[in-house]
Length: 240
Image 1 (spheres, rainbow, N blue to C red):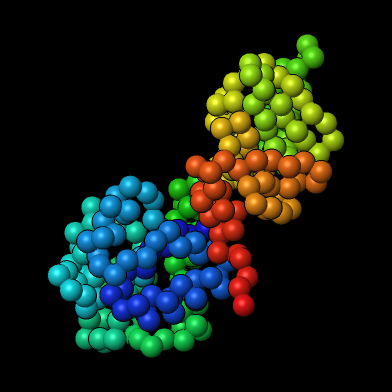
Image 2: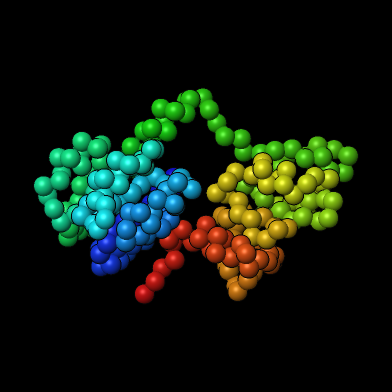
């Protein structure tokens, strides 16, 4: 489970420290950082954000005022140098209230609270008997064949057909590329090109504008490059 996060803080050093902490936590994915709450409004309105790291004292609008203005606010962890706002922060159901400067250990405790809350919420909303499908069927060579998601390496569009490359075979089926894409679990499969979708877990390396999966080289289009890199790396790129 990944938590999509946004940092809003007018202090560059504070944002830099938070980003470094986020990079060390596997289940946190940074969706954006802003030095002003108003600049973050568009992103929060346009995509699902799970967790805000929100400073309080900022120009034009405080973090508290901004958070109260959100129609469907995400989870929030307030980060501030001012302890006097702690009571108000918790009245807004904040996950935690971190006083600057805070250690990674203190940061870790806060984000684990957010993770546990999300897991508990999902467990309540998801019936115990619910189970995601792990396969689908296609018609190929005049028969129906079961395709398991875990066996797929990548999918390739071939004019009026689609080729599904698996660990042991290539299946050609008379389907549209879009219909295959709609049946693949998001997050596990990434569209790299108008004619290719890859299984994220099967990617071995990224070489220029190509992805390598075993002996296969799959192109990455220029328009998809940033999105592909973000989805594949998810803050897991180790740096010196």
